[in-house]
Amino acid sequence: MTEATDSRQRHRDSSKNRSSNPWHWIPTLYFGQGLPYVVVMTLSVIMYKNLGLSNTDIALYTSWLYLPWVIKPLWSPLIELFSRKRAWIVALQFLIGASLALVALTIPGPRVFQMTLAVFWLMAFASASHDIAADGFYMLALPQRSQAAFVGVRSTFYRLANIGGQGGLVYLAGELQERTGSMTTAWSIVFFVLAGLFVLMALYHQWMLPRPTADRLSQSSSGTRALLREFLQVFAEFFRKPGIAVILGFLLLYRFPEAQLLKLASPFLLDTAAVGGLGLSTKQVGIAYGTVGLSALTLGGLAGGWIISRVGLKRALWPLVLAMHVPNIAFLALAMALPANLGLISAALAVEQFGYGLGFTAYLMYMILVADGPHKTAHYAICTGFMALGMMLPGMWSGWLQAQLGYVGFFGWVLIATLPSFLMAAQLKIPADFGKKLDTDE
Image 1 (tube, rainbow, N blue to C red):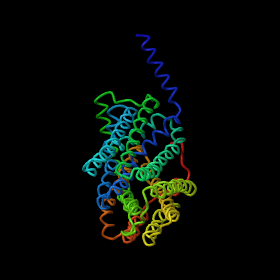
Image 2 (cartoon, rainbow, N blue to C red):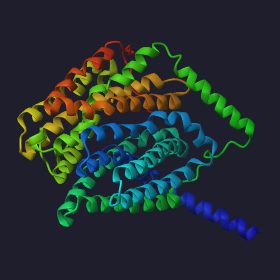
Image 3 (cartoon, helix red, strand yellow):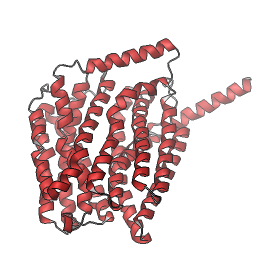
Image 4 (tube, one colour):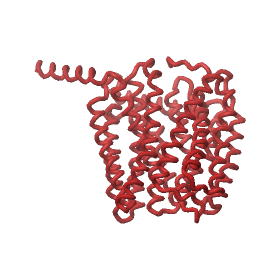
């Protein structure tokens, strides 16, 4: 009995020594958090376009996939109540890997749209749940000072997952299509590769993730009831915040034009000039939009954070709001001119994405301001739910609207759709120095 106890203790000590360095697991954890999101939100759009679906159907049905992120604050207590966050992370990564394999298997079969969409729904719920578990585990496994030090690392690897997914995997799909002559085969291979990657990631995290003592379960039914009661109270407190109508209006409408544009950006790049598109190949979209564009988006986000840290959110707000929306003119210009030069197209996309990165930083900082208080983690999660809702609803009708207006008319409408965002930004009340000097110990 003593030898068995000693063996278990040695195993725990070995595990602790092996995984105590955050560099061993934070990069892979947040790369794994970003990848399924970009698969569900972006790769699905490009894949369905390659497989011949209409813009109306693509925008409507893939916008519904935002729903798990809209409602994830409602089931976040379940992550607390059932099993440890470490176990959730590993199990959900296995589930995401299985979902990716199912997509690969259903692409060549009959009713490909219905079958793959059903699996994407499963993947979306697993991914949203993984977000909850991963973010909670991050806070449990690191002391507060280390949390602040590694926040840039987790953000960077989340962005790299977006670039790898929207850039590298889209390029791979185009390359495989050219080699095999079949877009169906190409996308099946891409999803099998992703499935294998996630299974390996789950195995790696099962071995490498630390086992913090704070990652434990409620031990009694009274503790469970108390947790649920506290959750309902925290949720109610959010809706009692001063100026809640303005808060919700801004969260829902700030990205109103971008929510519509994002669903049609890839179809516009892929459609032929005969229907108003640019006629790029799938490989070219991976380069121009997935790599150049997302790199510019990342740089814009970094620049936006630096600007806010220098002058504060209040002074930076309007320049960043304008930076968010004015570059949408790039899509209207592309739709009117229909250039064939990939370098010119990439430059225009880089300008638009850089501006988006700048403006989105203001949005994130405002959510931090709204969430500030004794329940900042839960309130921030609620803010992200409204953020997802603000992307879901406009995206649903964007495909139908583009079909009615054409690409030129649609991108003109996107510019008009910036007005609600400007109106809500004008209503915000922001403390003069908020964001200028951040307390990194919080």
